[in-house]
Length: 593
Image (tube, rainbow, N blue to C red; front, side, top):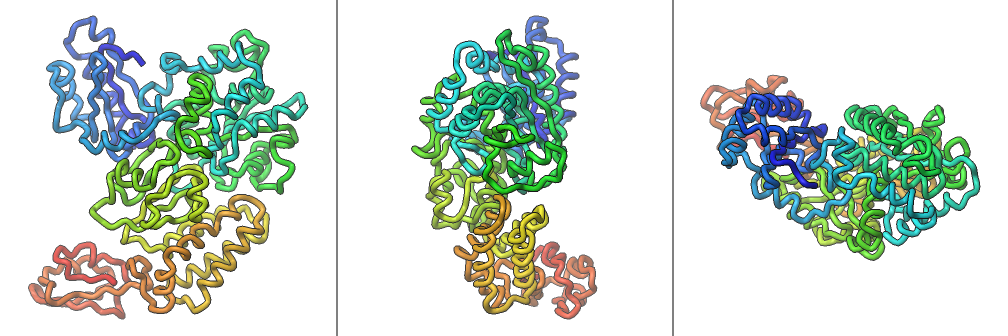
């Protein structure tokens, strides 16, 4: 995009707003208005909001672009704005102390941005900003120059697979639905992103909603659909607001509605708010939720492409899948297929979270190694801790150990080691994390989110959770590990939908790679990571205790006694294992094991 002579871009994704982006944006607008600079420069000045820049931990992120030379600032607060204006914009001398550091640039170096290429660079609330980066050119090309089969063949050649988790070839799905003879068809965008720690789809809609709309227009044309729905959870208010504005603006430009762009194709999109049920991310549960029923999956076949919304042929694609479509049409299927591996083409967006230095939103080519993501992009382990595992695929995925860090991130490679790409959650764990507790955390989530329709999921996950509760509470017994494995495999084999079929994955993968931790919990009544409360013991080391009294003041149970400047003692009978003494001790005198 060709920039103005002076452009100021403030991160106004959810993370940016939470860090104070609204106030920073206002401060820049106010400072520029008061600024005594040449009218020509002032006229060409643009102060505007952009979506997520990726490295959310550094918000508020601000870009200053002067004559196409960009400088990025991090951790910006409103009271820092005036100095940036005075020294950088007026004095042409960037404020070096506040500029993004080398690891910020390293964070982006190995990324390949397709879906996120315009997020963080354009105003998501301006359709003109999207036009400026060739927005809707792909839709125009499709509607005026291509047949429906031409479009489907392009998507098939690209090798694009669904980015919602299952990885089904997008072009094949479109072709099947397109071949079904029915006067009424639907296309649905699945934006019901419910994985803990996942925010890929939300950030895409917040940062570039028009790319998703354009992808839906192209998909609708390819299959012959006249109506579309975006199913998005109501817990994403900013994404919903920007999406609705984008739909309204697209309608005004005749990009939605009757006879789009003066062609014979008519198509419109409605927004359907979900109530936050994780199971509604499953396509058949999503469909019945749109229909006004309780979100519960149904058996397949028939598949939605044959009988979906209100019994009509329906294609369901997730946000990231649809946002790829305009790029493929504009730049060609071979260009897209040049990224990734033979069976996993293109790029993938991940939410990188957990115990790494640089957490945030990333987009990488399929086939990149986990080591590159964690150490080159993520900057390595936070606080110098040792890497222990990475959980991919959210609550439906599995944990991958240090000896597998060279593995490629693609559908086939992750499946071989008992995990999945999923929708794109990636949680990094260090040596302070208990793998039994981690498995319990994810299973508790899926158990609560089970719709209860089928017995294996409704009852099976509850039994799994009960066993894990016992183990983490120090009440495990011999045979529990084998019971977890047997029950987990049965649930995977017999559950109705993907939620139940993948719910045991965190349990099975942690048993596979961290069985000694389970055994320590059961046989030794110890949590090696000192996380499980009932298995922790706190003691005070006399040789290190200075008698400062900090632990006495912090203890809520009066379990610590001792005279000032003399070693203290801790009563194990009175200790409630809250860890307050451990947290406040500056001398390392409190031992946790």
